[in-house]
Image (cartoon, rainbow, N blue to C red; front, side):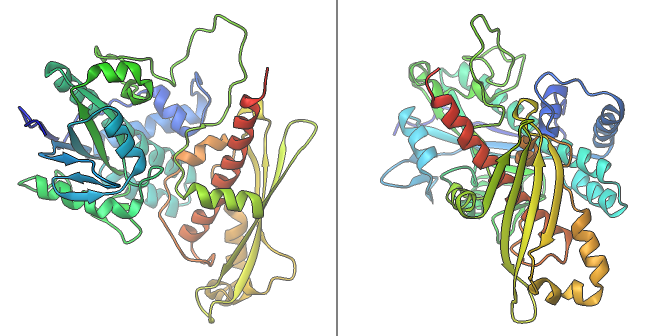
Length: 418
C-alpha cells in the first residue's frame, strides 16, 4: 500500500454552529420549503438561542495510518470491522485510507430537554431535542467539507461517511470504533464519550463515522453513488461534484411520481425485523379521503412477576399521502382480555396513574411520519410500560414499522409503468 504523504488531524472544542433553517425544519418533520411561523418559529428560535448560549459542540477527525479490505473484514490500523456496505464502497473507489471522525453536540441540550419533559413542557423538549440532532448533522457536514478541502489540495477525494448502526454495519461494533479513535489520538477526545452495552453513545447527540479516502477521483465521476456531495448540505462548498439530493430541483418535464417518505431511511432496528413485523403485526386500511387507519399488535412481558405475557394494540391515524402522512391520532390500549398488564409494577402501585400515562403518550403527534427517523430515543429492552423510556421505545418501533411498510408501497408504486 502506498505510504500516506500527510496525516490529517482536526479537532475543535467550540466550532461554529450555524444550522441551516431548512435542515432544522426538515428534521422537525416539515415538508421541503416550509417556512416556520407562529408558535413553531418561537420554539425554534428559543432552541437555537438556548444552544448558542449553553451548548458545547465539538468534533475530532484523524486519518488512519493503515487500511486493508481483505476477505470479509475492514482493518483500520489493525482493528477489524465488518460492514459489507462500507467495504464495498471502499473497494469500488479503490480507497487507500480512511479518516475516522467523531462529532458531538455535547450533553447540555440533552439534559435541558430532559428537564423540560419532566416539567411537562413537551414542545420545548421536542424542539431542543431535534436541534441537538441538527447540530450533529451540521458538524458532520462541515467536518466532511473541511476534509474535502484538504483532500482536493492533495489530489484526493473523500467518500460518503458511514457509521455503526447504519445498514449492514452492526451497532455492536461502536465500542471498537471508539476505542480505535482513542488509540489513534495521543490525548483524550475533545469531550467525554461512552458506549452503552446496547451500542448507543452517551451523550446520545454524538456520532462516530468513517470517511473513505481515494486518489482515484475519476472513479467518483463514473460511480455517482460514491459522491458524498449528494448527501452534503454545505451550500458554499467550492468542491461540489453533484447537487445536494434534498435541494429543490428545476422541473422541466411532466412531474414524475415522487415518494413523500425518505426511501433511504436509516432505521433504529434491522430491516429484517421491520419486514417481519410489517407482515405479522401490522394492518393498514386506506379510507376514501386518503387517510390511513393503522393497527399494530405488540406482544411483550412484564419485568417482574415471573415475566407475565402482555399484549397491547397501537392505533394510529395518518393523514393523506399528499400531506406527508401526518400523524393525526394515536392510542395505545391493552388487548381485550389481556391480564398481563395488570401485573406491571407501576400498575400494581397505582393503576389509574399507570393507564393515564400510557393514554397520554402521543409522540410526534401532528408531525409527518418521516419525523420518526430523526426522533432520538434511548434504547430500552424492557417489555413493560412502567416508564416513559420503555413506552417511547415501543412507539418508535411501531412508527418505524409503519414507515417501512409505506416506503415499500412507495417503491412498488414507483416501479410500476407510467
